Image (cartoon, rainbow, N blue to C red; front, side):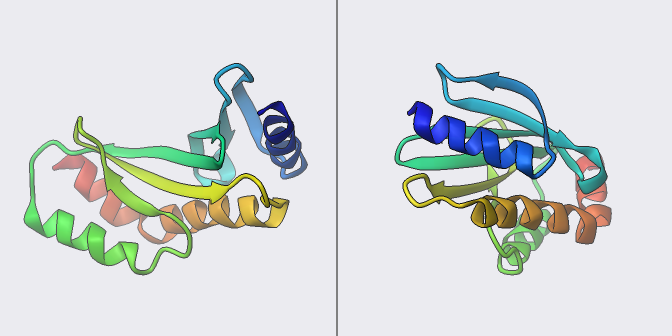
Length: 130
């Protein structure tokens, strides 16, 4: 596990992300890069996969239109997708294979989140208020 953990840490540092939490025992990082909209992105090394999750907003009231829009937006997301947690949180989630992970692949997944947040921010803000 620590080989993958160290590799991921090196990639994150090379990509200039701020690591606000790192726990090798649990295989978890929390990273930030506010200029790119990355805020408390949780990255978990859970061999054989790397899991990326960022909380986007809490669902305050069910709305078929909101769910439909989120599902339609999933089609446009390059890497990852919107998911709904059991506690009604909308989360961005992506998974990658650890065995052959390279820096470009990790960067692409995080950039996908950043692009999503910049392109879809008005809708996300509106959904978070309802």
